[in-house]
Length: 582
Image: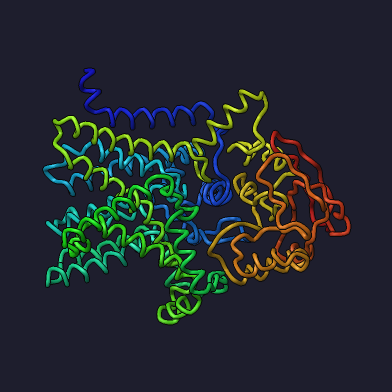
């Protein structure tokens, strides 16, 4: 038994991690510390809102935020991640999504590595498992963790189709979008696939019919599984805020600098931490191999090496990310392809975490293969390769990145134990404080009246079933953006940075401060310099607004036409409820 465990130590390691992570979250429950930015303030609240309103599977329905948004503007129900929220309470669904992300990454990489190495796979099992594990624990954009993790599965299916197509493989590819997301991944997978068909056609001197047939199969899958998104994109004539979003227009030097920065560090939604170890191993190996080929007068091998193709794709993705900020090029794309107006085609960078770790583990695999397994040097090299893989995993787990919830939870709970007082950061339960808002709703006899939040995210209200005129969404009516702007115009006129932020982007339709850049605090301690609210109450009422839930006791409530209903004390918030004077 002991020898068997030792032989499959990598599987034991992965299993222990999954069990330990699940145990941490099960023990602390909603006291766990979960990232707020683009997470609790966005998708988690929207999922709970659909649960509150029973609209996951509804058609022709509206969900009660931003004055009433079509259900079709929110994630499809034909998605593994969405279905988790249908089946489980929101916190449980969120944690299940994290654990499934790791499992999907391990399984996807395992299948791809087995296909790639063929008969030699038995020798590389430990590295394949560690590759999947390391990629799976990357703390990427949580709502799209499973789509990130499933990228190697898409590559595996396409490789199999290219070599030996079958109806089962095409069916699997058609169903792949159940794990993916079109706007962030699907569009680019289709573009990469089209490029591969063209490139292989030149290389093989004939078009690969099986791979060419994979294009409509995958595209059809995305259309079916995300039918709501395609319905809105293709059949709605509503002008959205995407048409008026203002993107950066950088100079050539600035574009190169941005491309270099994102190549080295990534971006916060795809923060792969490769710059700490992986990048250096990959670059040193690239230079070593290239110089060796040149010294041996085999320069063509540089172009044929699959490893160098990965490095070239990393450079390509980073350049596209930078070129997106070149206004002239972006306008050219939008002119040639009008449906892409406002579409962020710089999301090629979302594929770079997988490419970095694929390149890294290819180096480790070649270290494995450099010496026979039985010799002393071979054993040392293999131990070193596994050591580097474990070091990469340790860096991911122990670096406090934006979305490293496991680290944040363990660290904050340990500090609370040592210091004897709670963290100033919000836990999951404290952020939403559903008991507090249920108490407020019960006391006022809440019947779905429109409201807004001041001093905290509207998502907090949305989570507890309170209809909001404000909200956070990257795709809604331009007309509503303009209508809501009338409400916040007094604040925007006083703070130019807020005006630019709203007018040039507008995804966060919030009540803004008339003095500070933000009054939305990410901590329990909450102090402001100005307790006045700058709002057009008449415009608010015209949109149907009745209540303002505020973390700030307003000093100009009467002047603003607001009446204090009551104040309420919760574990994390003191909320002052104001109503529009009738």
